[in-house]
Picture 1 (tube, rainbow, N blue to C red):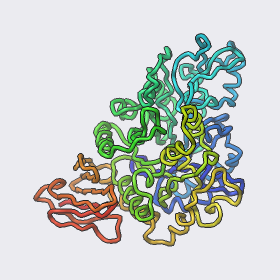
Picture 2 (cartoon, rainbow, N blue to C red):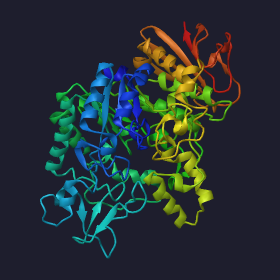
Picture 3 (tube, helix red, strand yellow):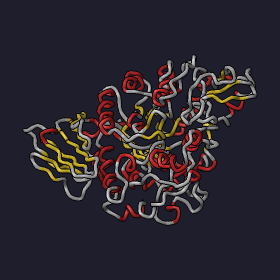
Picture 4 (cartoon, rainbow, N blue to C red):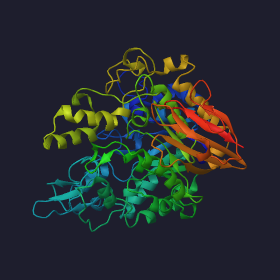
Length: 555
């Protein structure tokens, strides 16, 4: 199956490459870099939204599902980009954002005009009580999920910003309108959809109060609503089953227990979902800016648990970063000068040796890091700016809040790609929409191309290593050393072949006992690693240097 064996490269277009000097990445900028993307060895491109949008949430607030955002270009540019991708054997996965629209969409403009407008029930409108919202739900982006609209003296629901009103999927006209938009893009020739917060499209219409003191528990109040599977099965019947395409759902609140309900082959819903549990391991009860150190044992356990939960009936998504989470090497590795490259390479090995479809976010392939802007004025993300207001109200100073943004903020992954060491990292000839990470003179594509030991060259090698054997795609997965605080170890087995992956998630040398990860009648042969020299091992031990990854064939 092509979507199981392929590797996805995610593009955040606003920050990828600016072709016209207006400071904003665009579609023609992507066209300019298609050969570079192809050179990585990937097979699919997930393109974040390029539809018409007022950009309250950088394109995830869509005002017209049938047109291209002017900053990004024209539909002719899009058609040229799609043709260029297909010419190079690359498939295009677009973002589908149908839990909500923009408040500037024609549907919502009509909906808010009056209670008897034909579009009124395309969104959720409710009366408040005693000048309070209909319930206590809190938005993903801070504040109430309900916004009062004085035109009709009612509140509308928005799980995200107030400019992203939730579409009422109970209304069959809404569902049909969404399906029609999907068909439009499939008929153009796109190859699939990544479905934004698709687990939220069905609501409990009684709108019960939630436990707002625990953010993760509160998300459960929004997710996996009573009709979500009915809606997705209808979507599959009406649209998805009619095309040779791939679907992956973003699933806040989807637990291992619910996973197969979404992706089980017999369910006829989605091909896969993003399991987000490992991405929330730093979040405290008050959400992502209530930072907690990551529990490494839990991190490892989640890979094992999700693999078991999906079994042979389902399929997984393997990723460590995207447009909503910090840079891979800063979060899961060590981004200092000594270990940045080697830990970025080790994390590439982690990604590319697990079972499931692999997703690589732009810039990870050169080891880009988080950014530590010293003023909140330099941040652009609506999520972090709203959170800053909330924490200010609790008495927190900017100096106290900034370190939380430096570790957790979404703008960490939204600073422009570093193409070279020229001004603004070669991203634009104008003023970039968000500042470039100051470390671009040392970390950029041009420098990486010239350095045979770069993270970039290693990604290419590791991708080819994965593609050389179907074992990495389809092989069974067994984890070892589950209680080890530094080592991530697992075996992959397929058609008589067995490989062992051992990854050191620390700065210090670690010694692994072979008897803990292989039988006494088995021998190890070194196969692949992230250091210039092979890992040191004998019949009894494996010695791994700081952030070293090693793969062995077992016979």
